[in-house]
Image (cartoon, rainbow, N blue to C red; front, side):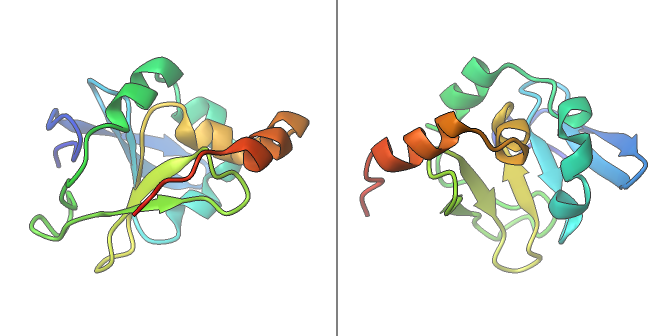
Length: 124
C-alpha cells in the first residue's frame, strides 16, 4: 500500500489494539474501518511524525483511497476539534491522518476548546 498523500510506501505498525499503516516518508497514518477509535490509547506511539510537516500536507487535496484505489477521499473536520482535518473513504470507511493529527485528536485540552471557538471557516 502506498501513502495517499506522498505516494511513499506504508509500513505496518502493530500495537495491542491491532495493526495500522504508517507512511515511511510523511509519517501519515491509515486506519481501516473502526481502527482509529480502537487505537486511540496508542496515539503517541503511532503518530510519531512532525506536526509541522503534517500541516503542510493538509494542502494536498483530491487524493484517492489507498485501499479502494480510485475512490476519492473526502476531507473531514472533527466536530469537537475543528482544527483537525482528516480524509475518509466513503466506500471502505478508512481514514487517513497527516502526521500529528491523530495524536492531537486523541488529546483533549483547554486549548482545544479555544481552537474550536476560533477555528476559521473551511469554506465550500
